[in-house]
Image (cartoon, rainbow, N blue to C red; front, side, top):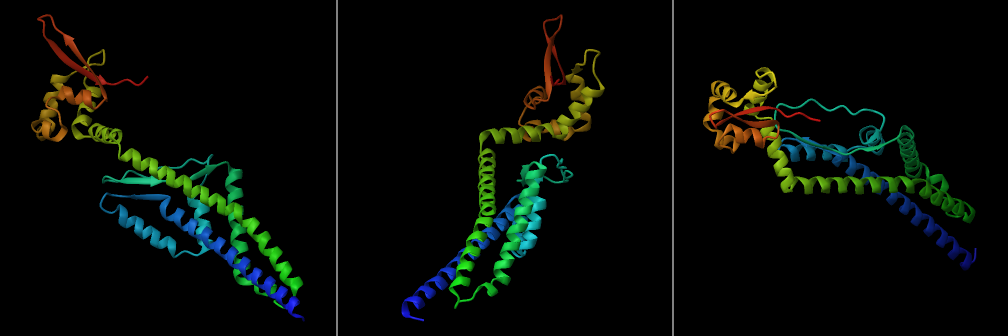
Length: 279
C-alpha cells in the first residue's frame, strides 16, 4: 500500500471515528433533554419543602437509564388530548404544584413514542454493536460505516428537535407562571382566594343559603349575630385578620355576594346580601 493510499485510508478512519463521536454526542444530548424534562415538567409541595422535593426528584431522574427515561416521558409527559387528566385530592395544608405536558392526538402520541423507541434502539446499536462495522483496513467497509452513521443521525435528529422544542415550550410556560406569580394581579387573586375560603366567608355563605327571605336576600345584621356566636374571635379581630372593619366591606371585597342597602320608611336603610348569581 503506497503512501497516498495509506493517507486516504487514515483520513477515512478518522472521519468514521469523528462521526461516531458526533452521533454519541447527539444521543447524550437527547438523554440530557429527557432528564431535564422529567426532572422539571412537574413540581409540588409546600413552601417549606418544594425545593427539597424537586431536588429529590431530579436526583432520582439522573440515575435512570435511557430506556427508563423514554418510558417515563411516554407516560408522564406525553398526553393524549382525548384522555381526561384527573386532579389529585386537595391536600390538608397549603400546597402548590406545576405540571407541563405535551398534548396531542392519539396518533401524534403514538408516533412520538415510536420515534422514542427507534432512537433508543439506534443508540444501543451504536454503543453495543458498532464494532463489527469497524474494519479499519477496508476502505469499502469504512465507507459503509460512514453511510450507516449518517443515516442513523438523520433518523434521530427529529427526536432531538422534538425534545429541544418541548424544553423551550416548558421553559416559556414556567417563565409566564413566574411572571404572573410576581405580578400585582396574582397577589390580588391570591388574597381573594384566601378570603373566599376563609372561615368567616364560609359561614356567611352557609347562612344566606339556609336563612333568607322569599326573594333570596338575607339580613346582614342577622348573619352578623350568628357569626359573632360561632366565630367570636374572627369578629372581634376582623380588621387584623381580614383587613376590613365591617362585615359589609368584607362581603363586597370577597366578590362572592351581592350586597344591597334596602331603604326604610324612616329614612335609614338595612343591608342585605345573597350569593352572587353567575349568568
